[in-house]
Image 1 (cartoon, rainbow, N blue to C red):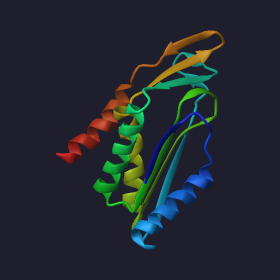
Image 2 (cartoon, rainbow, N blue to C red):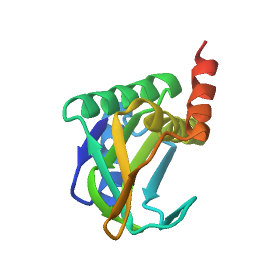
Image 3 (cartoon, rainbow, N blue to C red):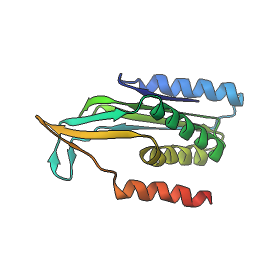
Image 4 (cartoon, rainbow, N blue to C red):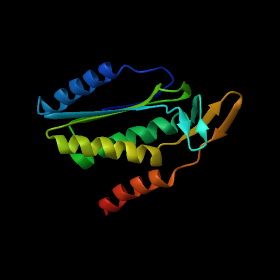
Length: 158
């Protein structure tokens, strides 16, 4: 299991192999599926073209929230392992911004774990995003669709 916040870019292949090694240590080769997701910085928003985003976080608190979320995914979906890496700082269009991976005995748990991590990450991990174009920048408010996705997972827990 791993959960990291970092400015540096990440290597998707290295993260995959790290997840697989961790899963094999925990489950003794019982992994039948690995699902990964990589999110990229989009080049536009509802208002038009942007050049990138700048992400801020609260050091310590953000890492703790991400770690707790990964632990919840492991427990909820009986995953062998899971990992999440989220970047902060100034990122440009098409830069990788987030990576999540889940390993499980069967594919559905791995898929569910990855979707849960992404839906809940946007809701429960304190990150603040600003979009920029030239010398203009605007803070981005939470989307109703992100809140709705997270609420579905919370309803299923009850």
